[in-house]
Length: 67
Image (cartoon, rainbow, N blue to C red; front, side, top):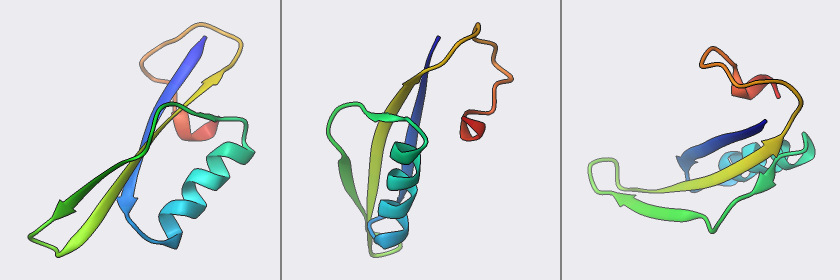
């Protein structure tokens, strides 16, 4: 099955570390990162889609962060 995650967060090194951690767990980048500005917080927010092929069948109770 193919799993999909969309990692989001403030545009800082912690966000980059979260994406790097996913890549090192076998996730692959899917598309370009997205950026938006949160005027309420005064911060730039990032998002990056990642996918991963794993054995098994999909069920909605899968905890994607465990993969």
